[in-house]
Length: 217
Length: 402
Image 1 (cartoon, chains in turn yellow, purple):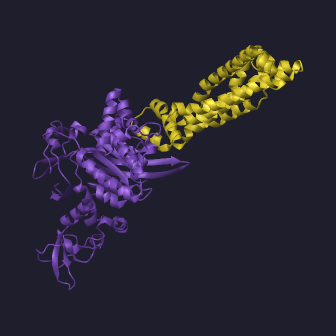
Image 2 (spheres, one colour):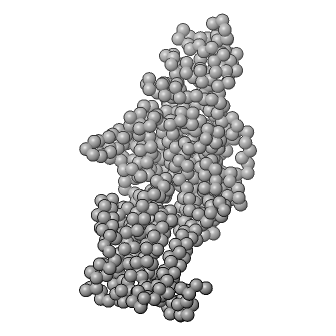
Image 3 (spheres, one colour):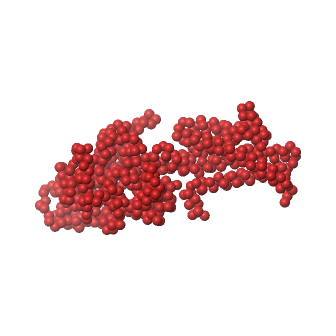
């Protein structure tokens, strides 16, 4: 085993604790972003003139450097998890809103027409037809946001939000490459697992996709 | 054998493939429809009850300062149990006309009534649940199984799961898809023709009295389309729904339609039975539309001489003479283009001018209809249980036309 992995092997509890912190941080942020982003995506799909301002605004927010964003938020939300979660949720918004709206746009006209024609209410159409069919797009949005969120969350350690960023910043401060490597490896692992896991989620929910995936393999 | 022919009554021409006595069993109807036309048939009385009525319906689209009259001042009636075909070139307003019936489009002016009620006064969801709707490629939901697709309207109506499933299996059997094979498949695992059948089954699931079909067979290959057309005719014989069917295929219109409404530029060019359109085309456009597009491939090889009877009535001066070696499509072209359609039939000559055969238009029209559907007649449909189709249409004491 290379010596660079030593920290990871010597302090498994510490690493796991920080990893769990990290998961919580990103998880809560993604949940919040989804809870806001999906309805917002539905809204701009239905009310077309809102599309441009909403996407532009969330695109603009996305370009704000994360450190600056934390700094801007601190006067309002203080130091710690709340600020980090807020910033992460705002960053995640763009991908989720845009993909929700794009996914709904991509739903086959025939399915929407059939749903209307058979007498579904707008809500039934959304619940039974449009959201399930847009699901792969929405999950892709969540996936992109999650993977990006995992790396951005590492920076949040600067403002005392905890997580794997702690290892990295501690490593920088004490000139201990092993800590930096341990933190980075766990971040990468988390991102890979999230990427794969959320990717599989649509197969779990949509039986028809699962059926064709099984047939294809 | 089904009664087949043209019935001339009160100056109106009715083309009835068969006649159910269902209206006798509905005491409430005469008071609601004072203008019933009674058609007395050999085996019972058919009341032609208006199911869908359009009065001066206009649809105007406004976009970017332009106004387009998609449908202009259209009026017609579709009777109960009738299959009415809306046909015309693209942009003729046929689809818009149909979509106004379930308020997928709102009419700009005019009145549309379904079963005697102005649809504007009805709850739109309620209205649509009472109207089956089939679109091109079936419009099946890809994420639902075949059974779930079929039972979606029962689900919306709050039936329990078991009853939904049962209904789906009944309907799949009705549309000739083995439930044990197809019920749990997903639409993309089906061929285009099978998807189309599921689409029809879905429209029948809640036993709505009316079904709207928007070019349902437009996206399948010609052979499958032909099978589906024959199959629909058979199904319609069993379920007797009021069907409005949009197509641009004149063969399809003649094969399926009890009534054909030919549209162009948002206006009705002619509204009549297939025989009407053939015998009395209302305009050059109708002639052209029928003449150019009415290929009748199935009848290309049937010749007039084969239809001619040897009992030849005396030919008046303006009698129409058709050469016996013409095929049926060729002859129908001659008939639509000729001026002398005032008689009951035409005379057939075999070579040297003097007519030695005679064909009534009634016979001619029924051959066209029967000829296209001849394979259907041979199919054994006894396995269909009338109870599956819905009580409304399978009254045990209804007089069988066969």
